[in-house]
Image (cartoon, one colour):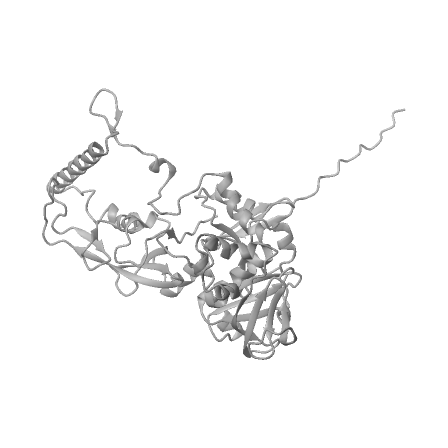
Length: 459
């Protein structure tokens, strides 16, 4: 007799948590993450999957649509732990955030002297490195102070109070601007709280200004009564409060996050020069006139070869035009639509939507996008951020009525050719890509150079 014993079943290994990350176009992507996976690791994975450039400015955003709150996770935060404290209606977004570490590069833009106590004591003589070191060093006692509006718990009313942000927490004075301990009331600590931007402050919370932010306890999911709604008087002061909160809470960890990608990989230029792809940036001038090609090392010879090639293309276009064939140089073909392939072109969106996109990706100098003009169907608009203010510049089409010659060059502009200009025709470009590349290298009539394209990547 053969007795059969049931075979032992192998128990499956622990199931990894699953998160869903959304891009700004609404598309979602499911990611399986281990318990020790950081926000920076998730961003790198999504960058690799989306085939986009990793310039250390991508962020994972914690978004609460019902409360109108969002914040960028710090690179070192564990995603699984953050998700455990989020309500069911919240979600993660994958988005650019150019000002994530901008305060390391331009600290004075983030910390006005009138808001930082030890800047006033030293009469503004503190060097840039020491200004940040006081925040990073746990033994120093920096203090940010100023007036903020505080929303009363359970009400729609706001009260203007004198606030003090220290390493031990955020305090408000019960008697004017007094800093005496008996007049200071603790509003929130830093250890168990996170600071959020409020995207719908006026609509949901009846905020007195557009510069609302919120301090939310980490253990609280959706209880509005536990949220500390605050409102600043301008964008610069709101940025100062929120940046100081991050620095005082995380300290040296932010410095390590900022330096770690730079040590792990070669620095990526932040669009200080026109960036297209790795292959294009490594191209060299070649001469194929002989049996074998050779690299043109002399810069003058390379320029001469480029001019000669441009003249050849222009003559070819004129011959095709004379034969009735469509010329590759005509604005009705490639030059009129080629900008639609660029990351900085957003199509036909409203001014308010362009403002929202710039604000979401960090209001740093040189952040820009191009869009179609709503009032003029033939024109475009350059939306640019400078000194935390968003400005708009109209790009008008210009038709060349006469052609002219430059020394040692062929005809520079053909009669009837369409061009684009930002300065009423003083500087003209055959297409929008040339225009953007020029203002990435030259400020021209703009308040600053174009540095960071407002990018949206589909997951």
